[in-house]
Image (tube, rainbow, N blue to C red; front, side, top):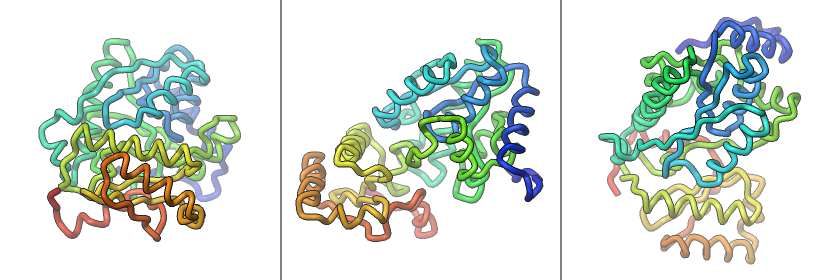
Length: 283
């Protein structure tokens, strides 16, 4: 997907107006809604423009953190948008559990193979994703699955970066404007490491425990017996404070990890993509 040609001087108000214009050009739309920063803004503006001709769709599976399933329902209710919640089964798709480098292709394919028929059943013309411009620069095989299945990316078409998504979300009073970056739990596993329900539950429970300790931007990366923690660099001193450190280690041991390691580089979205050039690993 190519980034749109937008004027460098376009203001946030210009882009908001452009987004409304794009959405107003659709007869109706189904918004794939995870409850993250991007899809929340998209659902809000689509609902503003299309009203009851806009429906949100949240697909839930074991690869979605339990806390995010609850949050998505609450956010849609706060926006006033109708939300369809449907089970998905990407872990059962051939090749997904083996965690290949194109894993996100299979995940997005599963989502859109649910979304397009659901949109058709509801009489909705378009399927929308909350992709932003910054998403185009990383390893994103899911974009190929989206393009193959005809999904639209109105935030990209309107020229929104991630920072601008947050800025407009704040202006509109959305509680997600400063929400930490999200990714499905499958992203916690190095490519080539098998993804299983039991491993997903352990990672999810460990991350929930860390959030209960007050950490916000974080990942628990799974490396067999080792849990490698990525947290915001500003929180590193607190993480090694004796009392907090002991609580973190106890959380990891409770989830079956022999060792708990703190990554001194801090949180980095998509950090496991750096391993792609090294080839697949097995665990």
